Image (cartoon, rainbow, N blue to C red):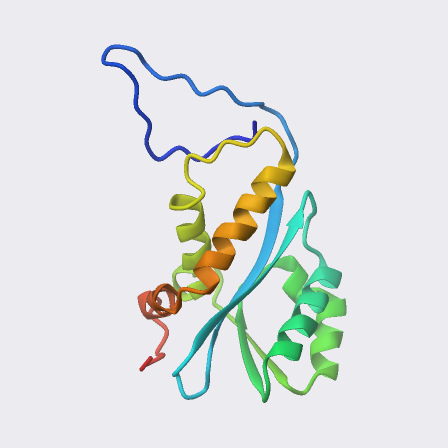
Length: 171
């Protein structure tokens, strides 16, 4: 099993529960996501892409940005953290060639400003909590399924934005 995030468990009184899982595994799911707020603040959307058993590099970031550009119209102010792939030379070249994208970095060590961090936290601490998978494909399916469910819950997406101290006013 992948190491599960346990929020709660139960057992008979006096019997400590034991959760068995594999240790020293190197399998993981990397994820890119963006919470989008429309210019008039009437709509909030989530885009994400999963990368099972892979690290995210500049190539994956550029492919994800192309996907987002295909889905959204007009100029995009891109607020993002200081992930090395975001600051990579290839990514910076792509941004320089894409006039619709206007990148702005969050200050260092300020995850509380990023609404996408609230999405990840919610995903891990709620629908994926206590999910124990022995292999990567079931974990990938569960992550995709729960992320899509969140993607279609605009009220929850609005809560992620409103919880951030960014000066965004939603309708």
